[in-house]
Amino acid sequence: KLRHCRQPAPAPCPPRPPRRPGSAAMARTLRKARNRKVVSRKVKPSRSQLKHTNPRLIRDEALRARFDIKKTMKQNLEATNVKEMYYDKLPDKIPEKPAHIPKVNEDELPIIKQLVKKHGDDYEAMHWDVKINIFQWTTAACKKRALAFNRGDVRSEAAEILSGHGMDLRKPLFGAAKKRNVFGH
Image (tube, rainbow, N blue to C red; front, side, top):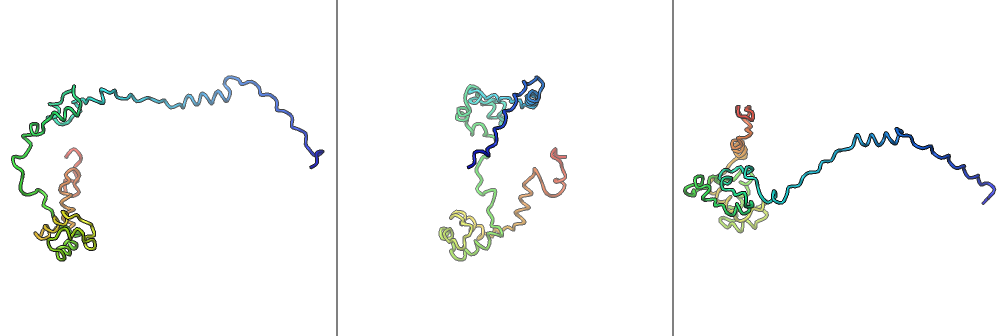
């Protein structure tokens, strides 16, 4: 290494002049202050607000009438008797036939036909037959579908879709009801 080829050290930088108010640094802090996001702290509900419920927030009239402000929601619900509250709305007797009669649709028909042909009334064997029972229905589901198939309760996919549209009164898909607005006219 050659020592005589070294360059001389650079001269030190001159000292900075003192900052004046209104300089670039001052403008930066003013800009930050102008664009600063105001943070508002959410007030957490107190223990009593969490523990007790405002009865005006309860929509059910029967429960609202029985609601005690001094008790917690759990204590109020434990003290209520559903039979007493809704005796006029409960049916006099439990119906024998279900309102929704189970049916077999087009997708299930060939599977349940093969299962009934192979196993007859042995629903447990239908459940374990994974080659035919591709949907892996339980024993109860196999029984329900097999009984519906034996009764002849078969329904097409189009009929299921149409009945679903008929039940959906909030947003009908067909007819004059579709043209109605949300207020019913």
